[in-house]
Length: 386
Figure 1 (cartoon, rainbow, N blue to C red):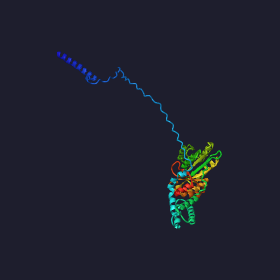
Figure 2: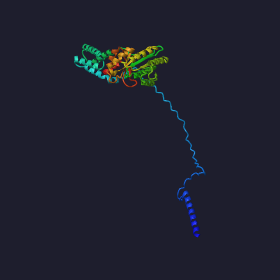
Figure 3: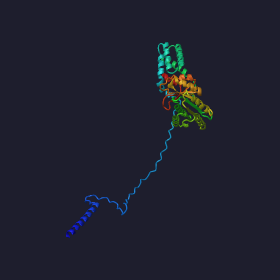
Figure 4: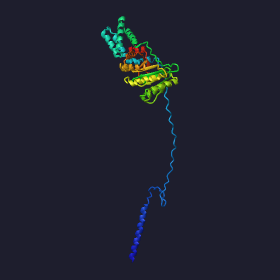
């Protein structure tokens, strides 16, 4: 009996001890005194979940967006007047054309001018794009003068050559541009030519020339086959304060030209310059359209000038283009561009002889003010280096 009571007591003690250690294991052992204090966790209410109080965050104050400043209008430039432009650009012209003058002066200054020497002079003129017929005429005239005057000092030779070149270029031709308004109507200038000759650039530079001379100018972007042409013209106009009439790409060129002239009349500007599409002279339909542009414009005002832009570096090839344009729109003047590069100055003589109309403008570089009224005296002096 005693053994039974003892066994029961041992079992009770074991159960109590196991429960004590089980509870201690669940709660965890007490941390040592040097351990950091554990963060307090929120109490969990009986039968629920812990409620965690979040700190209230304050959003930074928002700033009102600063409106962007409108783009500043382009600064209006004041171009130099046309008077004396070719003289100011003479050094540039001399650098590109002086080889012709030096060669001719050297040949003419020989002690003996036999047939071979005269043939060499003629070849030099032909290579300078003067053309075969004008070159022969110049040689014949020079041979006659040399026989008559006898002696040939350098100054005499230079004087003879200058007189002959001026005679062939046409010193007395009317090279004035009709840019003044007449009555209540502005002067109308159509600018025509093949793509790549610098036609649109010539329109912009001509606008600068006229603004420099005190004219008010309106530009018509009737080259609607190239969006870049209208953009380019817009840039030229904004630089000098000239308004541009333009439409979307593919619009009817004649209608754009008509609107430009109409607005020019309403605004009482002095000159309207209409840039036409760069026609290939072999495209009959496009050439007919160019004629249509001119006819439509003439329903409102007379066309004062039709300027044909030719690339001087194309030489004799440019003459074929010139003939076709002259048949379609009655060209009144020539603008020779790129005369400062590899161009040969004799093209001035050849193109005038071919068309029977004068060179009125020459382009002598890439700068905005490198378009100048053509001055025969300054041109020949630049060729001869005098």
